Amino acid sequence: MDVCDIKKVNSIYFSEDIEEVLSSLEKTRCEFWNLDRASANFLNMLIKMNNSKNVLEIGTSNGYSGIWILKALEETKGKLTTIEFWEKRQSVARENFKLCCKDAAFEAKIGSAYIVLQDLEEEIIKSKREKFDFVFIDANKKEYIDYFKIVDRILKPKGVILADNILTHYEKTLPYVNTLFENSNYQSQILEIGAGMMLSRKIK
Ligand SMILES: C[S@@+](CC[C@H](N)C(=O)[O-])C[C@H]1O[C@@H](n2cnc3c(N)ncnc32)[C@H](O)[C@@H]1O
Image (cartoon, rainbow, N blue to C red):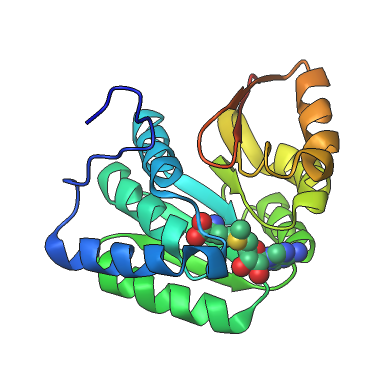
């Protein structure tokens, strides 16, 4: 391996059957707008390093990134809540989760992200659900800024937000990026991983 080949990812983590599912999903990556393996690997590591237990994903698609999240949550003993408005994709994701992640809990929500986020906040206010400690944003790029308005209220202090497509969808995500950089309660950094990710940590 060339030391400059930063996209190279060691794939020794999973059993052969899980690797089979992942590599078959990687073949249709462009059709389902999935993360690349390097970004997915980073997401998985981040959840484990942060010991996150209550993860929210906005933008499930067919569950590729969700599998990587759930594999991390098997280790931290946590749960994934994931939102997708396309029912067919969500049902494929559910099958993929059951196939690859037998020991991790997930809740797949179908609906428009902004509406589902409002419902989740309502449940948190009524103490029916705990705040999240990690949020992965990967749905409608123009709506990142709207998602953040609610995510900010349902994220625990010291919680983490990872947002994808910050560099590939620069103009659409700019309001989100500026808002995060201007918010003194968040420490943020843009990373040149995959499509460009913004990593933010809520201070209090
Ligand atoms: C970039 S893909 C997600 C890829 C996934 N995170 C992965 O890496 O495997 C974005 C997904 O968000 C869904 N989506 C887009 N806008 C949405 C919205 N407003 N509410 C819910 N889902 C949305 C799309 O249908 C699409 O499947």
